[in-house]
Image 1 (cartoon, rainbow, N blue to C red):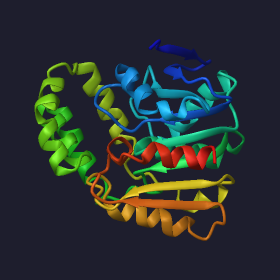
Image 2: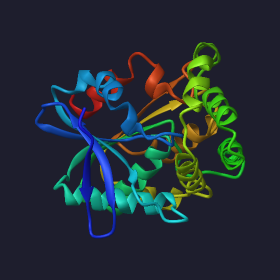
Image 3: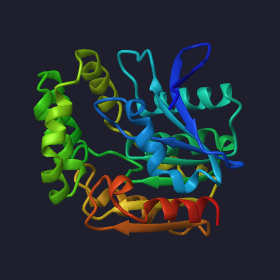
Length: 265
């Protein structure tokens, strides 16, 4: 899988693409210790059921992060990257922090988004919802790679899957660089106090929310709050998973089918 770079006047951003469909789908991944670019083949394999209907672009965050970078900053960067590539009117899927970025994009750049799917995300991050992320930040600042990876996996995956993944997570932690930890800290802090609840009326496109009743990162109230704020829209639909954890976007077997039915009915 070829990793490409889009260059704007302000920054560069890595992305990869796959699929051969006429539609355009953009995936904004969630917060991770190491870049999703490192796992491009696995992502392409997971979304192969959408590859006939769409040309699919997966974006990283900008390469040269400033000292502080809020979700709104990340959304502005992503909008610039999409415009630089000539992408607009896309089917946009954002997971976790990527969903927060996607929400801001839909509000502030409506011409870029045709349909919006949100996975395991929130319209706001309260102090209590930030506690898990805050623990990750502390472990990263302490350079406790193994502790960080295990805490991350325990919060993201359902218990049985976490137990199965422990050895792999511990091994992966050994490959994490200081630069990756610093980048992770900046991105994680960017979610603190995120809030677009007052701006949700600015979303003009159809919306699908895929939440997790057992979300171990943001908590189940995040999805419930988002659903409650959007439920009166005629173009809104949702589904709540239970038993697949925060990472239902990776663990639920019918997840991509739901995205396909929403984006390409």
